[in-house]
Image (cartoon, rainbow, N blue to C red; front, side):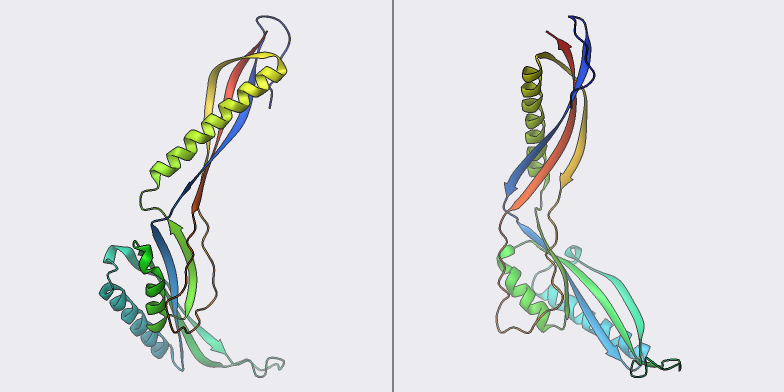
Length: 220
């Protein structure tokens, strides 16, 4: 965007450009969220079953080398299951069971083990797969490279616009970062029983950054 400008040697205006940068990096870790769900006749039984399954899963994760700092439970829920057989009647539906659920989030730092770990998680009783995100254990170098590329893109655009408009590019007046994009999780609804490790294609991460730069310009 070219700011207001009037002719004359001393006239000044502003030029605002947005630069974008992207770098690719191979991931070296993955964050997985799985769910344990139990349905039982009583609330206590549902909670007890979910707690036991969650405990067994955490024990398994420790045994296969996941550090305590790399696993966390969250979103424990308990809800009634209503009788839907007479949903069209005026009678108040009754409670036929209780459903309890709990999430376990873990970080896998050796991606070569990821497929086998997912298979072990399935076998241990996890019934829901709520997300998989590939990432970097040290993301800052890649993020900084994307930021530098975004600034370079802004400088290139500014020089191009100034030359095309016949104005002189002056000093930078402001730099505003638009943020750094992070990879989105891979969503899956439910695990299926498998006879071998889950196949995983990790690909590359695309780290992007955006920056807005304001330049002073003057007429030629």
